[in-house]
Image 1: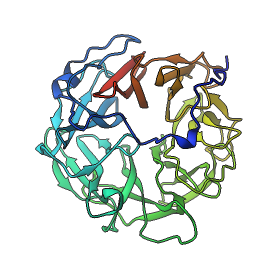
Image 2: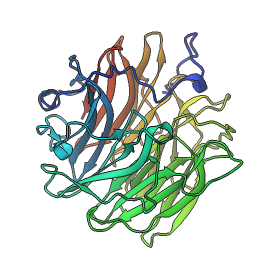
Image 3: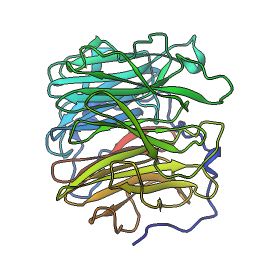
Image 4: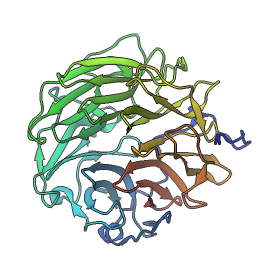
Length: 416
């Protein structure tokens, strides 16, 4: 079943939405106890509790069937970072640990430009953009913290960029048993005459995040403020999905085991020409069934003939892609995807409805060939945005933020 919904009168043109804005009370934060005690059950949403709190940043990764959750919180103007892990697919969580044990970290973070986390055994690395009141947009250089004991204790550590001036932003990280990878945007080289651009940079660490190698420029002219995605496959190759310029379609490339970068293709050749920055990224995941490798992706576009979020797959390592399949309505914005080798795929996204911004999901049990109808999974009458999903040992774990205009909380759902 194709899960495209009909256009509605409440559609808000994509380019007019402030995608990085969240309805967050600047005097809010989420407590550690709320994270640790949130119960879960099959296909039952949990973790949404109201208090004078606010979650302003979320990232989650799965490393060897352990989920690692990083949340950024705001309380009375003070920002903190919190770490937790789960060994049962998100049904229960460890007690939250305050990163660096600091009550106010100089961090610039928001949904869509979240602080990031990567894990390799007991080595865990967190990166973020420093808040710098003297710089444009208050964004400074990248900073990092590292734990060598599974997240119990944290220290400031070396950050991936070798250009220290900054600003650095729209960071993403990935890790496998061999290396940690980081991608981000910065303007160490100016691109006069091309509006809303930065360069896409990359670095690798082979010592658990203790140090980072010389940076590589993957694309010297990319979009200046869309989130990037880096993900490693079973062979240790790092795929990078990012928003290109001229056209402003999502592009994908791969860094092989010899640290060579190969540009592959546009994921959805929409030919969207846009001088600004839409704050929309995408996601990618891998599936290996009976030796047949398939790559699944979701991407957003503002092309007037293709507005919204689309699903595509590739069977040749990202060189060619299927016909784009729209998810939801033209107002779909932020999306993520995860896939199991057994053929199960779940796509998750937010979009405008009569009740405001809402999170939906759809799933396929046959490697993306057929899809269920779209289903709302966020709380009605709450502004829900920026969903994330990762596969677990037996299913999937999804997380997003919800706001009533005064407080913002973390909401999660387990699928198995």
